[in-house]
Picture: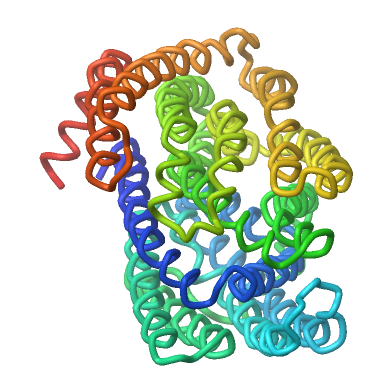
Length: 501
């Protein structure tokens, strides 16, 4: 399969995987919230966000692995690929042990910093967190080999494995909750299913590339030094992303309550799934950029970025405008009455997301070209503004305050400073970098808003049936404008790929 066609396969397989994840969450979240309740569900959310902070011990090494493996694959140098993977594995062995130990220490000694009124829930949460620490440790140790599918341009395989893991884990969690078990048993399930996934991933990788070997003889210090040189900036980026995307429930849990964290989380999760739709383009773009850089094909990088930005902007504005129109009826039909405030949170987050989501492609370009220091600058500004605003706004405005603290810096930074940096790296003007966003986004927003408002007045979305009809009509109305934006050569590639698939 050609390089460009594999890139498209990676994107569409990611969308398929995200669709499965969204459908799974659609049915599972109402189930788990009704079984656990807002407070106990909030404890589960807090645990996962707290555990995610121990992934800081990655030190940006995972981004370095993708960068170097994809580049060496472009050079067809499997000796260097083996050096990268085995050197990183030995490094992660120590990190995994440390992560599990630190998680246990936090869960046993510092879990009471969260405002959890029910003592039984607090104890249950602490035990579940200790188990998830083992889950984090195993993921670290197996990461280089089990997580290399993106680097070797086989995101489609990783997506199929993700789908299987998602479905098996969800089915097992439903059975556990249905039989009256709680957070501890849920954590054990997550641990076992993920460990099985890592083992299967390594076996598949070996069958794909027999030249990839696991052996300590490939470990060397120069390789580790090269990984760290790249990962220093990547680590700062990872820290900033973690604070940006995994701090909402923690801040609400500390400043407000676990119930507030539980109510806020479904809105954030829905926006997270929207982000994953765009990331389906961005994730395979990073190794593709590194691959093209290895072949000195920099002009193609700029063309690929601008085309992808045009398509992504249309998709982002379509989805985010739809969230603003249909967020409230969706939440009211989907979740218990106590979670209705999540609809207002989704609307606020959607405004900034429309402009932020297309810029995810810029992340891939900067990471792939080793210019990610610009990304770090913007992220540090974003996380600083967000945390300061959150500490100011949560007390007087609660969930809305947290939503504003998240949306405001995104809206400002990703319409000004960030696109300027990306354009500078690609050798294009700021207007060339922003024009696809504004033009495609405006068309998508107008078509979606006009069609959606007409449908809401004609057929109010008060049931699942009428809501589904509303959304279907809006999507149909966007087909023709979207197709007019697609370049002929890309449309030909899409048709050819689907015929062969």
